[in-house]
Image 1 (cartoon, rainbow, N blue to C red):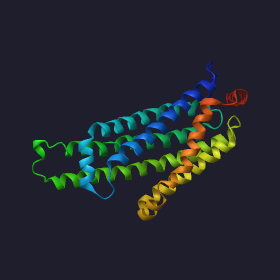
Image 2 (cartoon, rainbow, N blue to C red):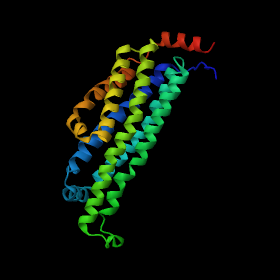
Image 3 (cartoon, one colour):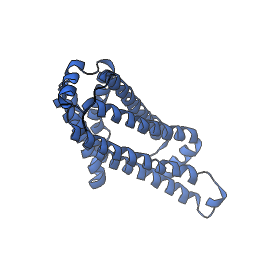
Image 4 (cartoon, rainbow, N blue to C red):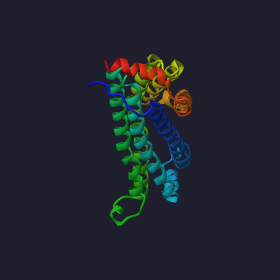
Length: 243
């Protein structure tokens, strides 16, 4: 497969990807900090169930925001394919495949957030279960979501390592952005494996360990929106890759 020159400026794709990335960051932050953190009471199934039953619309908005975030994942992946195809075709395919697995895992994981809505509705078919049982089951699904999210981030962490490397060797984006993204990938991997292998350590590190990824990803998306890529360098690499 050879690269076919595009009449669309690479900065168009850079900015589309940057705006999609910004939506991902905003919706992800709002969903975690202002939706789930305002409803979930750590270690207290009854209080969490009470909060959720009192604010089901807010909970649903959080789920909808997460799904919008995952749609934007696909837009960012498309932008990455266009931008980094001239740099290294095999690596950008690998990065996108890893990102696709992450997105698929996180979309499927949303069912864990939907289940508490069914369990706390007081429908007649739930009468065989006591209130305490329903609250406990709801809390378990929410707990499972946090682990599903961590599992998805393993693949995103690996993708970030690859994208960070592509940025560093691209010459049309600042290498420091690539270094930052690779640091973010390491943080994601460490946090996710700690969640699975040593939950106590994960609890101690969270949320501080996610600060470097936040800074790195926000810096990258803002650079793509404001500065874009060095078009002359990108065109030269595209010309070479098409030979």
